[in-house]
Length: 168
Image (cartoon, rainbow, N blue to C red; front, side, top):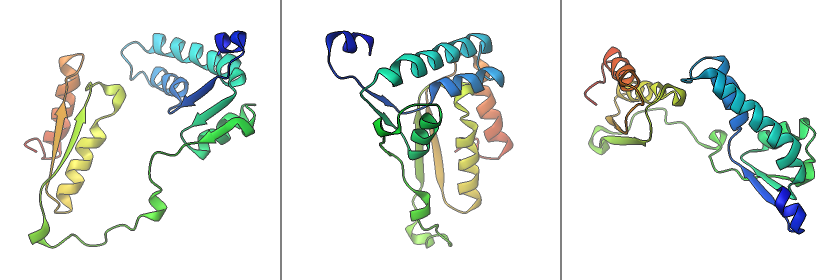
């Protein structure tokens, strides 16, 4: 953004996730491997974002209306914040109130490709698998990747065993 200003060209920024806030949370909850470094990174990112990147941007694309409101509340000009929603509005989705006919059931496979580290809170995927099975919906969870430490994978395996879905 500084170089763009010096050269007289417009600078646009798209923030899809509040990384600075996530770093602060991971550091304070001590989920990260090195919580102190994560908190320092979050602090540096916050300063860069609020003092240089956002104020010097000609326009900022954010992930949601809520994110735009949060940045506006921190003093960023609301006129240069545009939400680009890439998810779905759950209020517009009708929940299924009964399971589909047994003849229509095929096993659903949910895949995750990435690092199996605690910061990602992947146990929610194991919990989701157990919930689908509880509802009578056949599902499998495919985890592609490994943790940085053996305990990372092992904790997910233990959660799956605890919920009775370790073979799925």
